[in-house]
Length: 355
Image 1 (cartoon, one colour):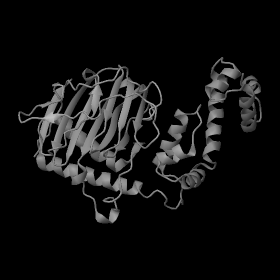
Image 2: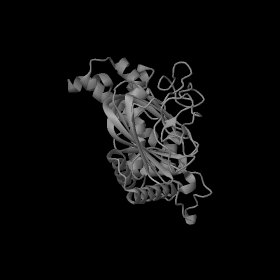
Image 3: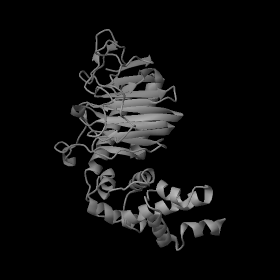
């Protein structure tokens, strides 16, 4: 059975315990405040309307996937428009931001969640998926994120350009998992801001069905099956973390890791965090990284710091000490020594040479 619903500015009430800590500190669960009441469930009635526990009008009508009654919580609900369509084992939802104000998102449920960032650039924001380091990536267009069932997803953003996000909720019991993949007995792995052209193409086709209000049940179910197969394929590939290095990191692995380094340039970055981003052991990650970039990860990080410093020396009037602090050096002497090792000159001499 196929169901379609449109609820603009639906009153999806979100319970906050005081001021949300999301985005005001570390997003790791043991260090952050409670963003949303993640155990709140939406109850779907027989009158094709859904109401949350507090009576606020929710998003989708009754559908054929029964107990699959969880959606991403969004606060404030008035800052977005939401459309959804459901068919057997899958719900697809398109969320269009209507305001550049701060918006917060949260989800934890016994269903897989695939997120496709179709439009928008963040002025500021942070995304956390349980089991991975958080990310402050601003250019998220054409990126995908996968949240396995039972994992927590939290995000906040302030938009530079208004964003559109597609959410896909999968019932794990109805995923087409071939026995040879081994996924029946192995948990799915979380993935943050990755790229996959085949999965993206299927996701955008499904999102178009939502926006167009398609009532072609057979086509919707066929596309849903394709999307589910692509998700299983991706997860099967992600569960092979220690394959031989050969050509180094995959292209999208390289983008994920380098983006993370750029976002956290002024911070100390552990090899374990970088390896976790691409689901590799530290040993295999270091080998693959060096094969791809020609230098170890810590050396790459240092080089990128100095390249950022060179840009700041050329384009700003900040002092050498201020620039050192900007890129993570607490002492001018250590910054000067690192700069000299990389460029052969001191920061002051470099500035004079380009002046």
